[in-house]
Amino acid sequence: MHWTEMKKDELELQFSPSCWSHRMAANEVIEAHVKALKEGTDKARALAQTLLNVPYGEGDGERLDVYIPNSNSLDLPLVIYIHGGYWQFLSKEESGFMAVPLVSKGVVVVAVDYDTAPKGNMDLIVSQVRKSVVSVVQQYSHINGLFICGHSAGAHLAAMVLSTDWSQYSIAPQIKGAFLVSGIYDLLPIVSTYVNEPLKMTDEVAVRNSPTTLVQQLKTSSSACHIVVAVAEHDSPEFRKQSEEYYRMLEASGLNVTLEDVPNTDHFNIIERLVEGEYHLTKLLLKMMGKS
Ligand SMILES: N[C@@H](CC(=O)c1ccccc1NC=O)C(=O)O
Image 1 (tube, helix red, strand yellow):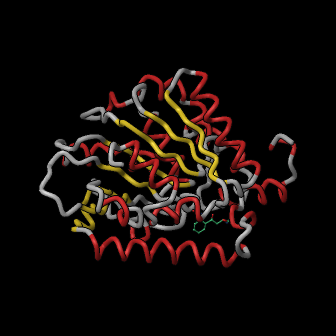
Image 2 (cartoon, helix red, strand yellow; image 1 turned 135 degrees about the horizontal axis):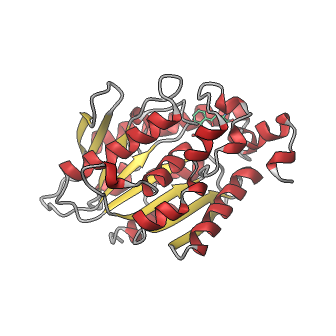
């Protein structure tokens, strides 16, 4: 069934990732998710050298954390992680977990904060994340490859970064690879759901912030980027459809894109497991960065 034909209840269920986990009840899976991300982030902060709360703009919320390998090398790959949580939950304080397996392999990890709703709205959040990427490139001009990874709403934001017209910015970041994990690429279906209550998007705001409407811009700005669209086996059918359709659009426009359907995962552990060195997506990310 197309989402336009769904009743509100059905649509809201499709966009309630916690209701589709095969591991735990809805409230438990979210609690466990936040705990896993926080524990992983605390571990990363103990393992790596860190620069915490580095400003990337004037706003209080415009800060990022850097996780640095204990290496003398200057030409390390760098991955920017953009957290999920429906543009209203989570922060960089739970977003350094993937540094655990990556810094030991010589990868710099940056976790970006943005003003979640209701403080921030969709246009602001997208512009903040874009600005953070420009700031990282300016500060770390010596890095050997810029990569971006986002989960859920963060995958949407990562796709929006790839789709940026950089002509209004001081530089045009060259992103070598992108990991889009369990993302939302068409925002129109969520406008009428509970997800939009704090965001208050109109259809117009949703359309201009949908990566599905910006594929031509992505092709112009990010033609050399290897894009991995990853989706969980136990994501909801609508989430799975969003990933499949965005993947097809990118592939049809001739981009270097791969669809990864990750078995035995749900919307939450598909990203939590990046704390493990032996997890399929961790290995794939390291391979993309030339570190395996
Ligand atoms: N109502 C949503 C809540 C949700 O997605 C979420 C909540 C807290 C932290 C992260 C979340 N989602 C994905 O990162 C759900 O049913 O999963």
